[in-house]
Length: 343
Image (cartoon, rainbow, N blue to C red; front, side, top):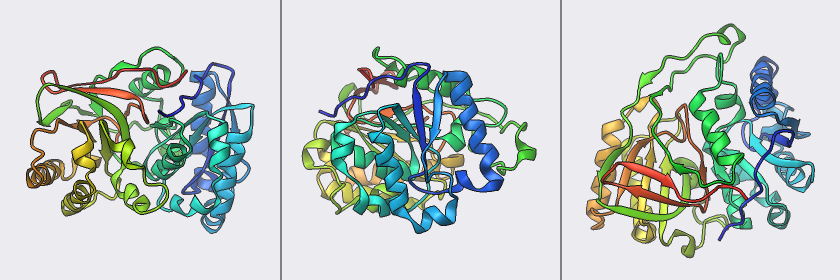
């Protein structure tokens, strides 16, 4: 069992950190960071503390992974801070591994949230034995042009500010992956929304339950074979969650990665899988073909799989608490989180 952190309340202090890319500290992007912080303050009533190195810019943070790790450990150590939210993902937070003090994380459980390359930091938390939250980041969801999406606001409130059971996660009515340049001239320009078709059952029937574990597929590849890779027991009776990044990986890579999970025995240990909506819905059908191909190769055609879900590299998004019990209902195309994410 992973330790659940305590829920957030208005008035709490939260830290912002840059465990991966340092863009939040770049002068031309500072407005974007400040917009995200303003939403935390005005919508959720939080007090925001940027970690000492988090706004030193991309060059400094690239060259100093130890400084990025120090920020994480500082935030976990600080009793004032009740939650930590990543500014943005990136592609090299695996370089923090030599500098992480897992004892500090274990002894100071608190909310930690982010997605994409922040998957690695979630694995830091997982190894330390605490539940963290695969969800929105400062520069993306919180700093959304014009206003935050009401779906994302609801999910933050349900998951981080309440110790009630999270419950059924309804699909968002609309979605966007449109890329508008992060320049101030675009600040008041809404991204184009498209109608969302909702959850899709790729295969399986009935109802299954399991605890949540997963992340961004490309980033999980960095962790394979390291001390971060979860022990076999954590994959048993799980619901795996997988999503892909803005790099829109070739469909053949989905096939290769899933075959690796199968030969490790991970797919066979799982009770079900959920897949996030691919960015821009590129390779939407091609990914489905590859997923089903691998399931057939390993006689896993009855494993329940939901597809096109609102998490990961899509907006708006819901939040997945690592280790929480969840349920896939294939007959109703429903996904439900069966417990609270926080104490």
